[in-house]
Amino acid sequence: MGRVEIRELECFLVLAEELHFGRTGERLYVSQSRVSQLLGALERRVGARLVDRTSRRVGLTPAGEDFLAALRPAYAALRAAVDGARERALGVGGPLRIGFQGVVGYGFMDVVGEFEERHPGCTTRITELPLADPFGALHRDEVDTAVVLLPVAEPGLVLGPVFSVEPQYAAASRRHPFAARTEVDAEDLATTPLIGVSGPAPDYWREAQSPAHTPAGTPVPRGPEVGTLQEGLSQVAANRGVMLLCRPTSEYHPRGDVVYVPVKGVGDSALGLVWRGDRENGRIRAFAEAVRGRR
Image: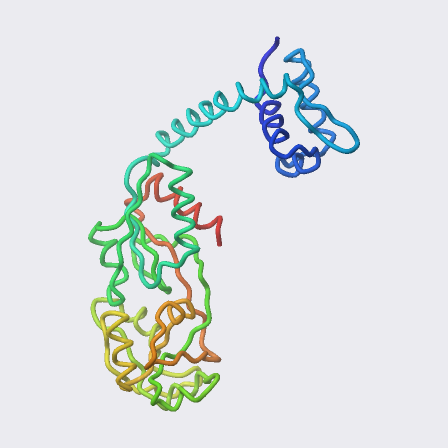
């Protein structure tokens, strides 16, 4: 019979799903003629015609149906063996503790789900990180990797993929003058107290979330400092200041007493995946690749 060629088997499996030579070539990143060559080689190896092809349709022959039924479980077992060996070699199996600051959006949860499907030996656990302490859980080894608001300039931490780059909004009380606006300029922040972040977060990070000056250099009045997002929104509702938030956060926290107004002239908000360089392993690298692939 000769040596079995995996590429021929993969081509047949895809063709059996698509029943179209062009789409099969697209999925395999080969030409339509190459699909025909692979199929022809497999049919000669098997000794039977597996596919009927006319100008109008593509279908499996009875021999092709029988071959497909036998091949699918064998190919799935082969893939599982290869994936299992790869996970063991990379250290992908085992738990992965993910810290998340802000809103766990549906897109990110899709990445987590796809990662778990691709690496069934790895279980994930998501932990909410305090707004006021984005990096503490990493330093204390309570999480393996974390999704945090940028910027990140911590010694010993590795910044991986950056994603969820979104415009910023000003959360304001319905009694605040901003509530009647469709947009505010960054320079308008000099006219109202800006709610800041308290706690152990580094100064550079807290400054990025609630800048002390407008882009033109005008001082911004200091408002209350808070440790959590809910505390901040409560201060906003009480009309003690405004708070800068990214668009997804504003969409996930609708309140009747708070209005979210786009701010023109401030930089976008962004999330980044970070981890400790001295704790990097195969699980973290594989998850970072999953996040990078969905940006």
